[in-house]
Image 1 (cartoon, one colour):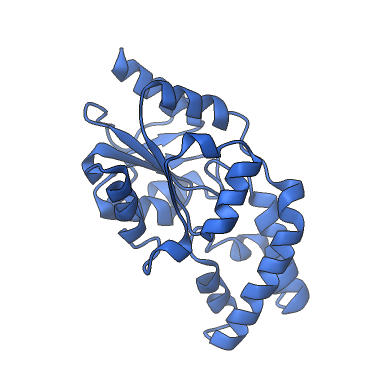
Image 2 (tube, helix red, strand yellow):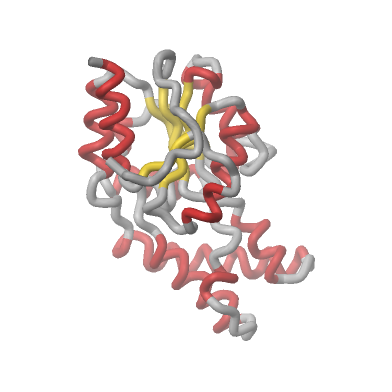
Length: 230
């Protein structure tokens, strides 16, 4: 288990379900996203931005990210969004993969009889495709994509919707994500939040949002929940 100092104490007594972000949390999509961003923003738009800037909005809806790069021009943002999706689709199936301990950790959560769901800023169909291709789909009874809700992370609405579909109060749910937007959305919904330190954002960026707990590996969370179940 991670030796990092925990920001708060995780209360596991009443935890009855888990909600996860997808990209950077369960699926290792960093290279897919970055290559698509470089292609659209640097190659097509000619902006020549650094990787840190390109990845700053990952975890929010794609159009919102492109609106930033298009400096508020909605038409340009739509063009960039479509170009991104075309490039992403071309490389997605060849490069999509889960993190090494994702499936083993999900098996452990399932053994604890914890229902699980996904709340992602990726569109539903593409998220489902990624889950199917990596063998993760059977573990989840709920999948919420960006086209399933009117409001999106960091707004808590999609996380609250996920709790509703799990038929659990937010106080009974852990929300696990690798971006500051995940932590803000989960906290706003009233869930305890787990900052995934193996994802796309730095530990400092995540701790700034005051997550309930941090984990260096998904298996760390399984360790904690199994101890509570003993």
